[in-house]
Amino acid sequence: MINLFEYQNKVAFPKEHFENLEVFLDAIWSKREKSSFYNEDENREEVQHFIQFLHKNKELKSNKFVGVIHFENQTINLLPKIFYNGTDATQEDVKVINSHVLWWLSYCRKLRFPNYLSGLNSQQADFFEILIYLFSKYTKELLNSSVYQRYIEIENELSYVKGCINFNEYINQNLARGRNHKVNCRYDSFEMDNPFNQCIKSVSRLLLTATKDQQNRSNLNDIIFILDEVSELEISSEECKRIQFNQLFTDFETVRDYCVLFLENSVSFNYKNDLKLFAFLLPMEYVFEDFIFGFIEKELEEVKVKSQAKYSLDEEKHFGLKPDLLLFVNGKKIIADTKYKMVYADTTDNKKGISQNDLYQMVAYAIRLNATDIKLLYPNSVKNNVTDLKTIEILDALADNKKITIKAHQVSILNNKISIEDLKNNKLTTVFDCVRLQLKQELEDIFNNIS
Image (tube, rainbow, N blue to C red):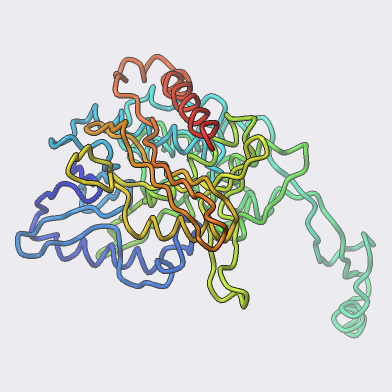
């Protein structure tokens, strides 16, 4: 097992497989679905961003993605940089890190987790195996109680009239050929073989090629057996996203969101002599942004939040602005921007971790949106917890010297005291309750402490 932390450590990879891995990841990048997790530049770029290949010493270094890659019987874990403490991670460390990623994802808008969010009671250390466990367990239990059915328009030849007659087909194909006893009909039928069930079946088969866990394989095979009458069709993530449910089937929204997550961020295909390879990868900076948005929306009732609202900088609307979060607290407008960056307690740095480009960006947001309070939110890490971050005050000469205040904050998203026993005996919601309360208090203090 190889553990790579974003932009941190380097690990040697077997020379005989080094070039093949690079070709494999290039193929994954070109095959990936154009996900909402990727920005426009990444959707256009054709050079893969997952791993840096250092050819001189045949070493690997992770970029900004977290997840797992299965290649040549090797598991490569890509882990968040905020957990790197200068040493390699043990299997127990990886489990603890995975639990954090799952907790963050539980607040993300792009995924609804089952209410019993647990999954680490099993022995999986692989982040992807845990996600498969959650999906397969929840989906199997749901299908055992109720299989989703919907009305589908059917065209068929019948010996009796059902629905409405397709007269054109009947005249051309039946009446003209002496088969007037057969009637071409068009009717609605309550069918199990519909796009949603086809999507579940397709995703289950995809995951079967990747999982090595026996419980996961059993759950996935049970799902496929339940959906035996459903057609074997591949459904894209965009098609899956468009599936809507009435109030009788809201439980299936969780399954749909899991399917979208797997379809957008997973790649599995035959590669060189039918070897099954798999990768599941998420860009961490977007996970952090989505987590903060979801946390504020769910936990801070007095704060109204908009995410990724689009504005134009110029009158002709050629240049866009898209702040991460636009908040309204007690009638006051606040711009918050998530910065998934490491913050260091460097007394020689007068900028205190705020980059020049970030400052320019925040001033543009403030002027365009007529806001005077800007909050930069950075994650804490296992090594560096900085309480004294920079406050910058800027006078806008074009607005009667109105003061723009930019304040950087490091927020708590880690629980450094988690043990494996905690994960085995408790749900994640229980394990992370102390961090939830701490983060909630921090954000309330940040948003209430404005000029």
